[in-house]
Image (cartoon, rainbow, N blue to C red; front, side, top):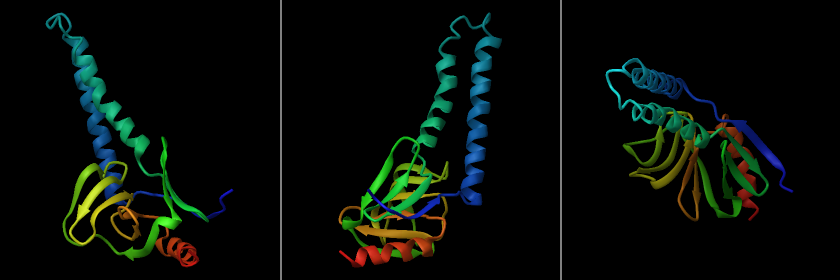
Length: 174
């Protein structure tokens, strides 16, 4: 049984919170307008039924984004876990070669696949200094870079320093 050494929720910074609120409001207002128009203009537009699935696409995508958004970082004596509603990302300690703090991203960071700002930033990204990496973040600062045998991973634990202090002794014992 794994022993938990560090656990903290991933809380959004002001920017990610504002983007999430704005996108959520826009999606629901648009869905309400499209779905409502299907019924308001039913007599003038007899083929109104295609508008109903169109009205549901936005909220469905919103829910999927929420389900895959990072919620917490847990460090056990065996792995680093990124908890999400539908699944958890597991990074074995044996695969981590190095862990370091980053104040923020330097240069241009491109999203290859994932979400940027809506319930956080998560997915596959690319940066000139780091290369291709997996990102599970809810803030744009106080990052932790885990260099693994595979693709690097960037996290934003609530207290980056405390997370690194708990993690580094585990990396030295291997």
